[in-house]
Image (cartoon, rainbow, N blue to C red):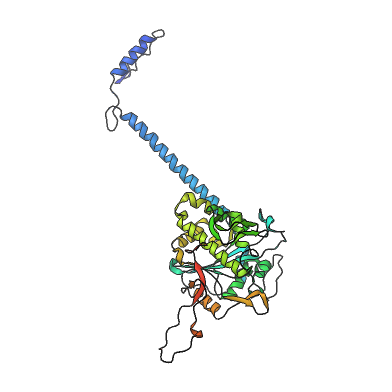
Length: 415
């Protein structure tokens, strides 16, 4: 019997009551029927194809999940960053008086450590008076070709000309000769950048501002930084109590170490800047030597801490921008990452303030402007040519590369 011409009819279903007999017949029929041939033919092929389909589906889900997680992490890190548009708006008003941008691929980044007491966790360091000063300012010069990085500390007590700046309430200050960190207090980042540019003649391309909490998170993200102390330290103002010897400092201790002034060394701000440079050098060295930049599991906590901690200009306010910056730093050997303080001495009219040493300071600023090598050595600078007695028989020689007192990241704090 057929349903229609040329088409065999379906077998009749077992009649009610056939039960086991019907099932047995069906089983016999199934056992005797050949397996359906697939593309490759042969028994078991449908099962393999079924397994491959599920495997492909599982891999697809895993890939999509990883991509989704990656995108989530990217967006999270990207959204952590705070963009400072106020500084850019103010700097545009004074574009004509700013130094020209470098014609090379060199970049100058101003790093500002804010001592603000506002914000979560910062109130323990003092009463919030609604103002902030630049506890640390470093001009970071990245040479074209990624061959070197030079970090120049600018003393907060350096006497400089602070230009007329816009205050938070919209009023303007008068130009004044004052200590350097006043610029950040009265006019914020834009005023500090303009002060640095007038002082150095060097264009600031980008800036980053980090507060106390941000610094601590960065240190914790790399699992602490090793230091060596000749004597025990007990400094209530810096919230620091440490035994003598080699040890690893984490967030709160690390912050106290770089902030301490009265209990370490001679109590001068210059010595504190030297200690900050040593610590930052050790931090850079650890990041590079531990493979943090090449290991996603180690890199993510560092990026998370960094992006939560900084306020930056629009040119560095994305994860891609910061990654490119980190990649540039990774390409520089630690011995070519250098730290120094601008040549300074006690101010003539107030020993508690600083003034530039000339012509050494101008030489340093020229090297940065022209993207020329900056040579740093520990201890005192070498004898300068102008200090030597002229030799009438000696032929004239080209001007030597100036040398400055400083250190490299390869030395670390315990060197």
